[in-house]
Length: 327
Image (cartoon, rainbow, N blue to C red; front, top):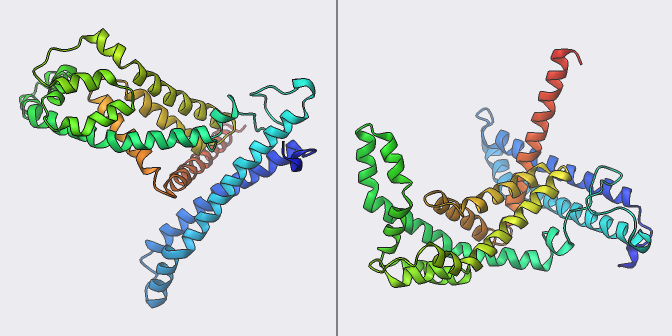
């Protein structure tokens, strides 16, 4: 335990963290609203307008966003420090248990720190691993979609034109057709081989290596060989689900929306194609983009803005309902 944490007031730490977080959300919201007004106001013309728009888009807005991101990060650190202080203050391990609400409405995150802290070495390494997988998953998924459309897109289109929508839907969601299209692609191995091995999908790797004319492994054999991949995928879904729960409990709407969407994409990737393929492409692209320096902070900031707007909208609706019924 760091020396500067002994004797710290947990309630004040959490209050300050909440203030930092709220200020960060407000700054991002104001930045978005100002950008809309500055860039889309037809009444403001002339050299001064052009110059200020350039300065705003080039440096002013970036400075506000940087400040907001710094406040958000410091808010998370303060919450972590409050949790550490609370644990250090508990005599003999007694006291507030994980998940107990704090004095100011904050709560101790569920799960050990190496899992619940998104900035822990484990979580940072896990994000990097998923990002590398994403770099392989996106071209693989796009290749599968292209192959299916090339081989069966015309059939689906003809059924739609003939008015047989149900048959078209069945054709489009036919798992066997998707898998056959993928195996008949001579170039697919270049996209899938490394990705299948890294993700533990040894059954998919074996089946694809045997080629289009080979006999299927069989569902149980393939499932067994893919068991490591299922476990790794389940861990990702579990971690995103844990983030969602902790964000909801802490009232972090934007973070809850972001983690919830990641969880949904992770669950969706287990579904048969085309749902699984679409979720794999979207989730892989997301993970790969977050490898870019600064991209994760930008995505987090965007969700914070959306979450702040949602909170304000819900509050306005609630007040309107109260006023309407005279509460």
